[in-house]
Each structure stands twice: as C-alpha cells, then as structure tokens.
Image 1 (cartoon, one colour):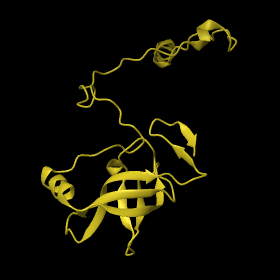
Image 2 (tube, one colour):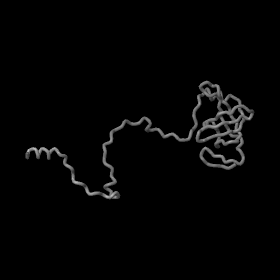
Image 3 (tube, one colour):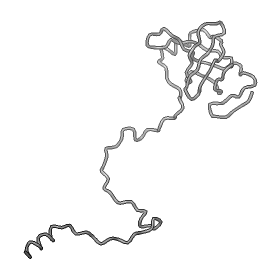
Length: 158
C-alpha cells in the first residue's frame, strides 16, 4: 500500500504556494505578462500616408479634360454643396435640370454655399456618357450675408 500511496502523490500536480496579494497601485502588478510575438510579413501599405477623411481632388483623363476645356462656359447658382460629402448641385441660370458638381472640380479658394453665383463647363459622366457634371467651377459672386469657408478652414463673413 505504501507503493500505491507514493504513486498517487507523484501523479498529483504540485501547486505553488499562494503569493501575497499586491495592491493594484504597486508597480509589480502593472506589468503585463511577456508573450512571444510572431514575426509578421511587412505590410505593402507600410510606407504610404493615411488618406485624408475629406474628399480631395481627383484626376480626369486627358481626353475628358480637353473636351471640357473646349466647351462653352455656363452660368448658374449653387443649389447646395456639402464639403463632408464632397459634392453638390448647380442650378443653371437658363433653366433645366440641376447639374452635379464634385469637390475636385471647384476652383478658387472658397467652398461654395447655397446662393453663390458660379461659372462652369460641362463634362459627360461615364460609363454611358448620358449625364453631365460641372467642371472648372469658379465662384463669380459670393452670396451676400453668408459665411464662407476657405479650403484651409478659415471662416469669412461676406
């Protein structure tokens, strides 16, 4: 029986004595357990900057830019424009449907607001080229009595 008792004692796990509890503010309790980190393959995007959350300018193909530059200049009034969404609409002064305008197509230092008079050219929107959008949009007259924001974020009251 003594041989059985020793085999049972040997098979039981040995528990270490209980450590004295440490206060949460003691420096020893603030250390995280060390773990072995695995090597990861380098990210292909490692050396690139994080893009801005605000929409920025985009590039148009040369043929679309040439067609837009050769077209006539139209007048209209800014119906609405959302800098955070990156687009808005222009109401043509000669009537007709509202025309889409993208943030990248606005020239000058001010963000357009409702009521600003603008000049623009039109360019066909892919893929079917059935609809048009305003390009080379310039604000000709700021709406009086409204606050205008520059692209840099400064607010100016006109």
